[in-house]
Length: 193
Image (cartoon, rainbow, N blue to C red):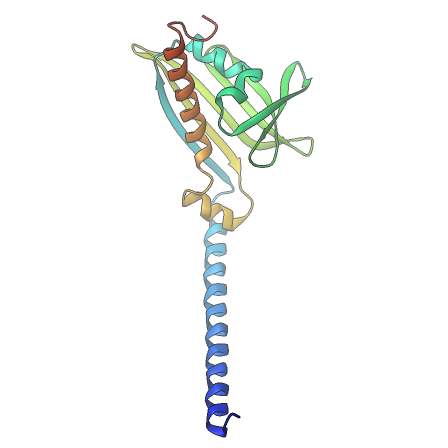
């Protein structure tokens, strides 16, 4: 049986633990409020850019980029790609990967220099846009990819600025670089050449 002193000590310990938990919750709420306030000051539009130098001609890189059916073979973020009915004579497709499926459509195709792809959400155009530009150099082609996205959640804006979710551009360019390396090792000619 517990004596009176032990009961008081346990009761005091429970009160201290309860106050500590309340204090911790207050600190977490304040931090979350601060992050939300900072995120509210950041712009809704988010932009990420990356560059890659490939030893192929712009035409060879272009053929890889516009080969929708071949994309799941070299893009690590895709497990499948479904072609959807064209809109305005431009291709539309569903990218199926590790996350939620994304519907994308081709906006601009200026062969072999500039490709603009835009996301579609709930049947309307979303801000998420990928622009790939190809510039010939003496060593091959400089590939520049720019991704723009609309980030409405202020906490997500802060996380994006801290680097969360910024790997899409790096992953795409890394996959393209790997595809180019695989192409060089498998045959002397670039794809389609």
